[in-house]
Amino acid sequence: MRVLAIESSCDETAAAVVTDGQIIESNIVASQSELHAKYGGIVPEVAARAHLQSIIPVVRQALVDAHVGWEDLDAISATRGPGLPSALVVGFGAARGLAFGLGLPFVPVDHIEGHVMANWLIQKQTLDLPNLPAVALVVSGGHTELLLVEEGPVFKRLGGTRDDAAGEAFDKVARLLGLSYPGGPEVSKAASNAVVKKMHFPRAWLRGTDDFSFSGLKTAVYRSVEELQNSDINEIAWAFQESVVDVLSKKAVYAAEREGAQSLLLAGGVAANSRLREIVQDRSTIPVHIPPPSLCTDNAAMIAAATRIEMAISSDSLIDIDPTPYRSRVQRIG
Image (tube, rainbow, N blue to C red; front, top):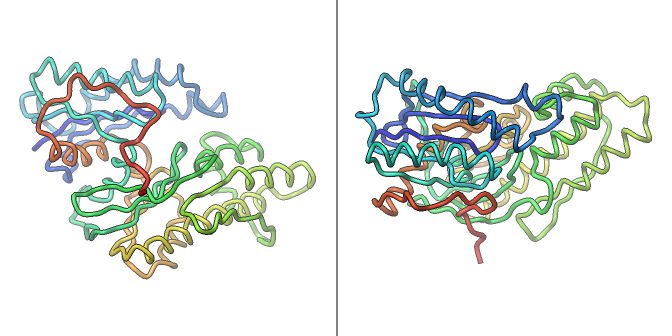
């Protein structure tokens, strides 16, 4: 089963060809980071126009790199949501049109499930694949979710952020510190240059839940910047990152132990953060699976990996389905 997948939920235009939901034949990503950097964040309509310009070249390059033609494809899939409405429409519409024109099944895919399924992708070598049940921590600019992944796989939402996503908090703190966009790598770089490492920011544990909150932490950083004019930016970045990583890692490890998970999975753009990867691996008593950084950020290979889940549920082409920008298929337990 060879799938062409398209991803356009935010600010990356991506296309990939993947076989059997695991073997990456090509994975092309056109980033818009430089385009949005001057605004300090993503402008949805600017992102949509950039998707329109990039979508056809990216799809063509994915086929070229995979050394396949249209006749070699078995299905076409695309991110259905969640994501930016105007951005989703571009990739979703292109994939649906291609599927209709080629007479191939069209498969809408949940973006969050895609991030988790990146842990099953194989590039140039075989990997130790996760054992189920697993707990997955999905952390990105738009999402912070804690999921239970059972055989199927079936996804159940244990908890998530009540306000800012972790990646969004990184971007906002980067702006407060005068760092460039995207904020995650910039804050991480500044944190690595910290020397004293004595500053401390609060942790919002929200005890008794699997939920997260980062708005209070963001406010604490703002007050520090305002009150301590001569504070070392690197020290603030370090203290902020430690607070985020501490909460994410402890809650994920605790949930995995409580649920009797056999694996702990990281996914999403913030999963590329080296400090988060290090602390989760140190604290977990079960195997931790983390995609390489290129598969943590938004890409189409992860959408292709999740396509097999949708096709197992229904073999029908879903041409008449529309995007769902504000809703994930993953539902909270209970």
